[in-house]
Image: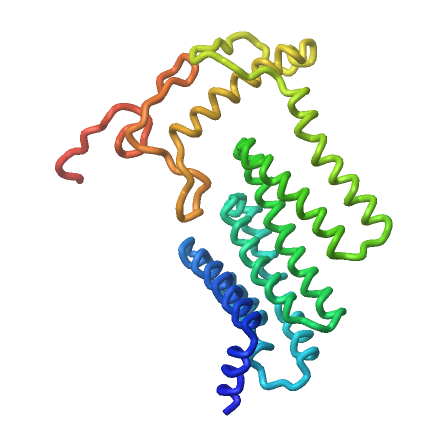
Length: 293
């Protein structure tokens, strides 16, 4: 009987049906992404725990909906805290510094965002909005850190734009004290002027395929005496290194290692010819014996 009444209420409230469907799809996508990457069982468990917290008050038999949403918020924060700690551990082991985890975090943040529309108590709603902000910030930090570490300027500037939008959203969604408002405005100005300063200060990095990097421009003593020469040398090196990474390496789809070597690849790295054989080793093809002892 109670189940029938719940289903009847879903039919009378299209908004409830839409947000509930969105939450189920988002949490399901996050769980599926974790299964695809062979995540550890605690991560999958607490991910499911957080997902259940987002929909439990909708199907619970409690007559006090504000109390049900308050307990759900506590449960969602507990599950999310464990997931945040898991992200920190993954990054410390160099397996989480990937834009994949940023998208994963934003999917969970979107699911929590849909939940906030169903909460009526002002104090409880603030806790749900804060959880949305926590997931959004986690994804933003991972996105910017991963794109910076992998020297991907396009993705890095996209992350800056998303960070700018996040700060503006915080200004409009939360009543912040003066100190936080000042900090948010400072970050907004920093994000706006960072690309301009980077463009002005960036050393010229265009280089021929056979650019010369001989000499001692890389040494500490030479760089200390002539900083401009060192920056030019560093730009030449990064130019060739970026090409090397794009040609010879591919991301590990299982996220166990940061990269895998692309087989059957050949390219020029300054004055050296780099050849990767069909077995992923550098050098020519090696004929294996028919029998092993």
